[in-house]
Image (cartoon, rainbow, N blue to C red):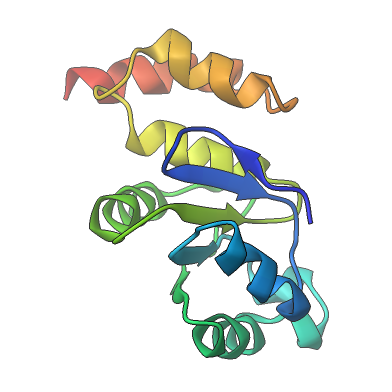
Amino acid sequence: MDIRPLTETYAVSPQIAPEDMDAIVAAGFKTLVCNRPDGEIPPELHAEQMRKAAEAAGLQFVLNPVIGGAISMENVTAQGETLAQSDGPVLAYCASGNRSSIVWALSQAGQRPTDELVAIPARYGYMLEPFRQMLDQLAQN
């Protein structure tokens, strides 16, 4: 498991497994967000299996599947609402952590400077530069 903190209250990770839940709780996370559609992964990692493991460990589980290349405003809104409503730090995962970084950045547009929203994920190799214009547009709304 490779947890990559973007802020004090939000981190991303490549794919996790049910056996990672105790370590996620021990790291202080309260909410787990699955940004990976079931169609990309084997059955033992499907959302329902992950939900059961997360809830058994005491985590809140949120399913917000993000399709690569087809991120929707519903995905962005759901990610932002989850972060705002969580009673503690949020860990979001997908295949690499990239989609989880993108929906986070888009959900934070207008709350943080665009340069910061691009630079923070870049520390982990997530290139959000192509989203700069969208971040700026969302910040103005």
